[in-house]
Image 1 (cartoon, rainbow, N blue to C red):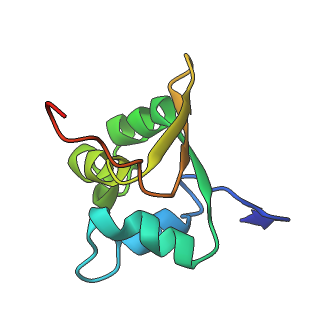
Image 2 (cartoon, helix red, strand yellow):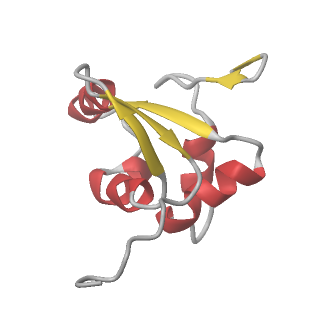
Length: 101
């Protein structure tokens, strides 16, 4: 659902990430790029809620742990919270200097 410039998703009302993940040939390494193409810059994830959905069998299998880890490796972490929420910038993470250099 969109309110102004904000979109949120629930287990009952799937959001843009779930639609992208369900596209044929969807690659988690391209999800952030697809979200940016749709006009998104930031995202918040509640891993406590995602774990509850998974335990209940409600989590979209396209958003399983391996795929989410791959996706999160393509974004920039802004803040992690004790409540197991994270805020990410959908821009690629800054380049890392070469090892030993």
